[in-house]
View 1 (spheres, rainbow, N blue to C red):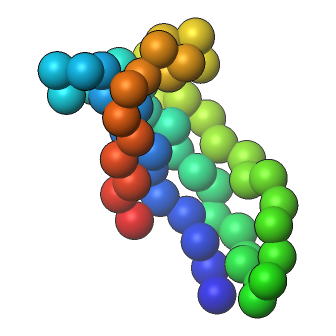
View 2: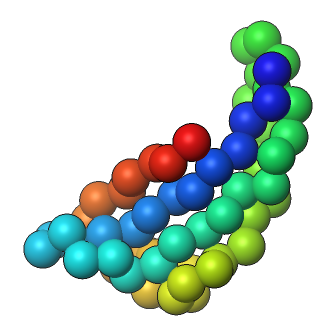
View 3: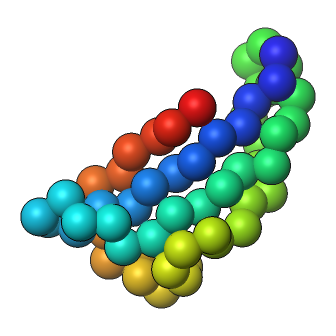
Length: 57
């Protein structure tokens, strides 16, 4: 199965701090691995301060 999408990092007032786009990759059953991504908005430092995380597939 292929997996990819967007991770949206939100602050306590649900404002967008950063967005990370995940590259599409295969997911195998019972696997755990790191996926490559890039920030289309904001930075990793801003994402660290997020209170909520939302996924868009």
